[in-house]
Amino acid sequence: MSLLALSRPLWRCIYFDPADVRNDAEHILRAALPGYTWELTNQATVHHWQSRATGRDIPAYVSVAASMASWPETATAVGVRLTDRGALELVAPHGLVDLFALTLRPSPVASDPRAYTSRLREKGWLVRWPRLRMVQADGLPVRQRG
Image (cartoon, rainbow, N blue to C red; front, top):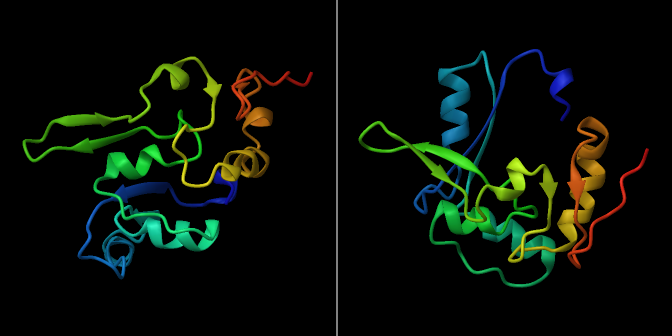
C-alpha cells in the first residue's frame, strides 16, 4: 500500500493479547475512528501465519518485544507504547543504532530470513531514501546504485 495513494492518515499499530485470537481490535478502531486507515496486528497471533509462510513451526511469542525481534530488519523493530502511568516507553529489541545510522540489516533472529530480501524489493526503501546503507544477510555491505 503506497502512502501517497491514501486519502486518510495511516496508523500502523501492534498489540499483544493472547485472548484476542480473532483480532477484533482493528474492527473496533475502524468503527470508532473511521477517518483513519488502520493496520492493526496482534503480535500474540503472528506466529500462526509465520508458521504457514515458512513451512515450519514458529513458537508463540511471549511479548510484543519478542515478536518485534523476529521482524525481518533490525531498524524497523522500533515502537513506542503508552504505559499504565501515561509515560512513553521505547521498545527496540535490536536497539537504535541501525535506525539512526540509516542502516538496513537483517534481524539475526528473523522468523523468515528470506523476508528481508523480498521486503527490500517490495518497499523500495533504497529508491525512496537513497542515503540508506543496506547490509546483506552475510553482514557485508551492498554497493549503492547511483
